[in-house]
Image (tube, rainbow, N blue to C red; front, top):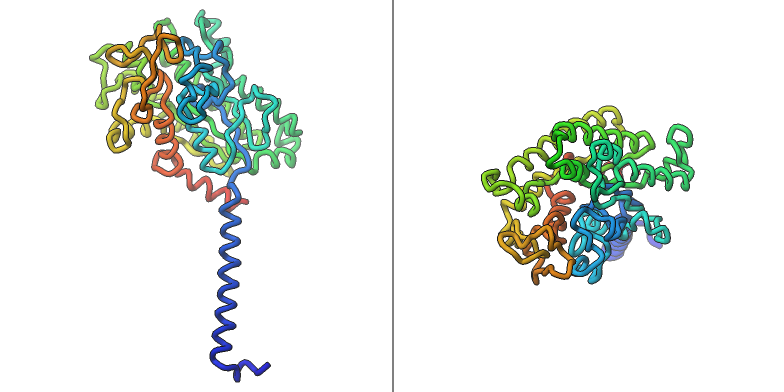
Length: 386
């Protein structure tokens, strides 16, 4: 071989081109491998019917919504009922899709593959323990499960992974939480709903439910949770059930029940303060607040651009004026009817949302500006630490 100084120009060019090609292929392969690897290996989800992927059978669901095991629930995407309170996927389902993970199996499906996580959310669940409602004679048709129940289920599963306390078995717990995303869906709306018309004040529910959520979050952080998303309450005054019961004079700037939207807003404001305190106490963790309240408002304000034509009418219900909603003829019952185009509706059955709405909300969390800090910062933190 000739010394490099005497190589023909064409040979030198060929060698350089080959080296550049090899470098490009190596870089592309590495990038592809990185892109193919999900940032999280599993998700643990908690919450109520907005997050429940099947823990609630129809007989134990929220009051008046006991037909979740019947069509048209699940008709849009799964084409059969999945015990999800919607026509299709929920926010958590779109989250798992975006992270290249399978849909989360419900905790009660003990035969399911749980290697990618578990969903502990239960429809009708409360933040405040059930005993509070017992003491106040408010147990009629109320789900017995609460956030504390879900935490107990989670603890039981952790023991199966030899993780009882991060302080006692740090290595085992490290293996559980290092690649896990904790998703805490909205919780607390049922607490307010179950006490409507009672002597229990809204302020009492606010204090007790936020205290409960805060204690739940801290319990997870103490166990070793590192990456967490916490949803706030949605604009509960925009739900069809609320609209049908409230006075026409009780309306805000987007046409929803003003008093209930303020109630949820005030709740979220305090919750965010508690989350900020937890960030300071656990500086090595990443806690994202998902602003359901403003995400929902944004959809209402931009509904035509997003393809929504019906802001308050339900897709599945009684077909009666003014909202197609009757508490005695709820979705899935023999007398109910469902619309042909659920993607144009925000409300599915009067309390729960359509798959189309859940998708928009999920995208506003994952890609939009409705998480604080942005969801992308959580992914960056995970990749950096990994």
